[in-house]
Length: 424
Image (cartoon, rainbow, N blue to C red; front, side, top):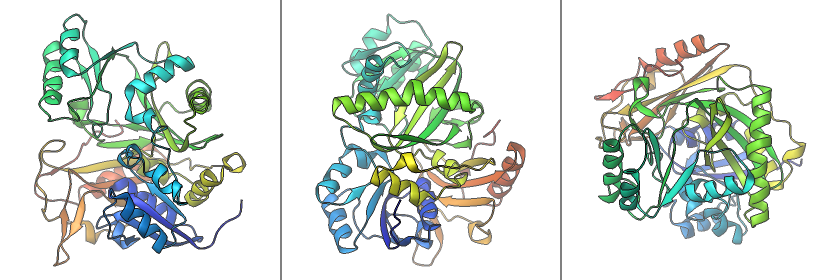
């Protein structure tokens, strides 16, 4: 594969995922400039902040042309749902991410369920409801526990495992009242599967899929997996369930049939794909797809990646993944999210953060900024619900956890919190 020595890259997003992507790209000698929009206080130290509205695609295009951008990496699903890949590719700008229609694998639960049926992929039994009001009527006839999913995006908060009807109704009322996602969203009601979850990540170039790594995510806001669903409070990589047989099964039984049928439908997939699966007594079931690197899983997975991340992006872009060997460290990595009080609901911004500047962000423990900014006096302030990610790696899970939590205890701000049971 021919390497270009003057790559100029634009990363879209401002979270911990984008911070780790920028850092991974910066490791390559074949990168000239890394730009990020909107970025954050941590990203600003390693990349140039593009002063544009990243959701105004005309502004993004103008910036790309002016700065001779070789390719764009959209961090979140929001850009992909809005068609950033289609828009920029029509203008000759390469994007490491799927088209708007291929993104339906994440942006529409209904689409993925139908594709699973078409492809013979194991997934929970399901029915579709026109909206939340319709779902409330149908749920009166169902046995609990049961899983309720919004068809459309809801920032990782559109799923509920309802133990009883009252829990389900509260969740659906939040949708009806406009507090969660779109009121118009269709609702999926599906059987509750039992087992352990895992996330398996792949790079895809339209023809081939190469395995990047796995993680176990901790979604609930509270310890012992209690409380509301969040975008993720931490993770470990690899998944405790990962082995050669499992990776082969996920690729053969889930990912490949998906990509083959996407191609037949005219929705050829390129970019990053991760399969959220459940290990049950009856086999491995697909729970959901995400069409980008997860957050905070990305931080832990990239921490173990030995193959140059730029080379992976270039292989996706060129359609040459088949020739690329992707290697991973045998170390275990841990990511712990530090969040503001009130997350994932209401939380204050602009609170001063202490301790970060005193820590050396090198070696086996890294601090990635998610919701941060600096004021005119240079003070580091909170600017989101998930504020910082601490990522540590070591030869075993205990050492990785010890290193990570040691750093977590040295950072603080008023009302901050983090789960103390990641990796348990």
